Every structure is written in structure tokens, then in C-alpha cells.
Image (spheres, rainbow, N blue to C red):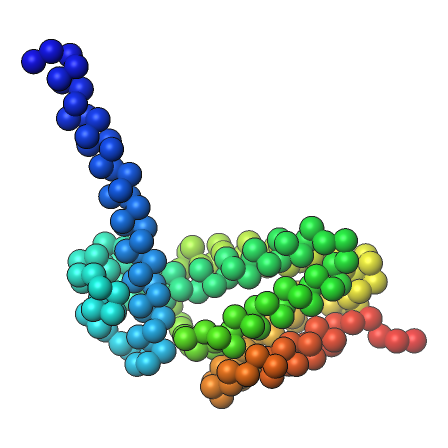
Length: 201
């Protein structure tokens, strides 16, 4: 065997690695999407076998990506938070941070009104990655609120935790009620945002 022949198996292995990795990513996303649907229909108590069937993969594929069901629930929440984070980062680039803050919250509400998985998820589990994602989103929101305060668009004494409390309450209440009307979600979101406008003297 010459040097050229010896290299051929290596190239084939490397070439196959890309598709295998792409398949793994697709399967992971399929599992997350299937879990959202199954949990919406059956609750968080639904089993992994049902999720695997819905995703069109084997149970082994689910467990290779998520060792426990808690890991799967955390992955759903992390993906949603990352979408919200993208909206906040976009808002930070705006020259009108007050309007951008409102728009970011409206986008989050629009997604919540269309979620197959309940917006107010009661999950007592723990996840380091989820905690880190929450901290990152909170940091970006803090920067946005600080910027809006400098422009006089948000009251000086507003705290990000207060925003989470009010908006989270809206999401949980409307989610539990099964509310799907985007207009209702939008109105309640505007009421939350308006609560943080500077007082009129």
C-alpha cells in the first residue's frame, strides 16, 4: 500500500463525520420539538418512549442527548430564553431603547401566545446551563433597562426582577387559562411595560 492509498480511509472517515454531526443536531432538535408537543398534550409526566415515537427516533437517541427528562425540559426552556435574549440584544442596538424594550416584550408575548408547551411551566428541577442562561438574559435586560432609564423612557427606580415578576405573572396566568389570542397577550404586555414608565408630574 502506498502513501496515497493509506490516506483514503482517513479522508472517508473525516468526510462522514460532518453528516453524522449534522444528523445528531437535527435529531436533537426533533426531540426537543416533539417533547414540547407531547408535554403540551400529556403534561411533563409524559414518558420518554412517547417522545421518541413522536420525534421519529429511538429511545437511545433521546437518552444520548438528554440523560434525564429534567435535562430535556431544561433544553426547552433554554431555547426559549435564547430567543428572548436575541430580542433584547437587538433592542440594545436601537436608538430608542424605550420603544425597543416594549417591542422585545411584545415579541416574547407573541411567542408565548403561540407556544404548544404551556407558557407557565411548573418545573422544580435544577440545571446549571439554564441558570447560566437566565443570568445572561438578566444581564442583557439590565443593560437595556439602564439605557432606557438614561433616555427617560423607564422610571429610575425600576428593577429587572420586578419586570420578571409582573411579566412572568402574566405569562403564567394567561398560559394556565389557555389564552391564545395574541391581542390579549399584547394588551397585558403593554400594561406591564406601562407600569414602568416614568411618573407624570
